Length: 116
View 1 (cartoon, rainbow, N blue to C red):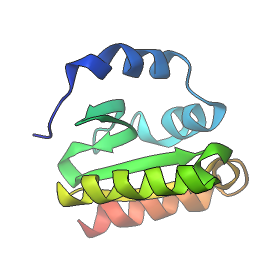
View 2 (cartoon, rainbow, N blue to C red; view 1 turned 45 degrees about the horizontal axis):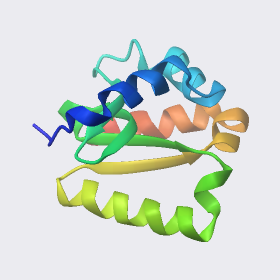
View 3 (tube, one colour; view 1 turned 135 degrees about the vertical axis):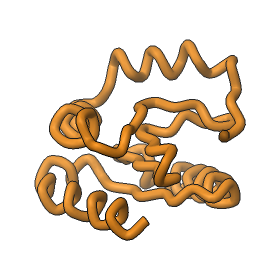
View 4 (cartoon, helix red, strand yellow; view 1 turned 30 degrees about the horizontal axis):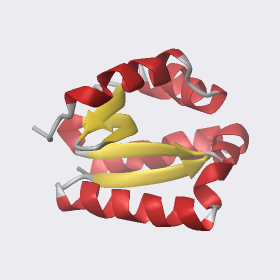
């Protein structure tokens, strides 16, 4: 079990209701009915991850342009370090990756799942 911060639950629910087109594409096009169950917008400690497969300890993040500023990169590194310290593996993809290389992104995720 990963640390859960109840105060982020309303924000996680809001993010689920207002998912980006890329998050919806990955969710409805691949993760939602995957044999290894995924949850979306899951609260872990003081963060909300885009997708979590608890059984494989896999976090998938879909990053928009705000993640590629100096502050965004620093924030993401701190966040990734914390998640990895909990034994999670973090896969990051850009919105452009999802838009232009969806099949290969799904294959990368499946390859990781198959190796676990």
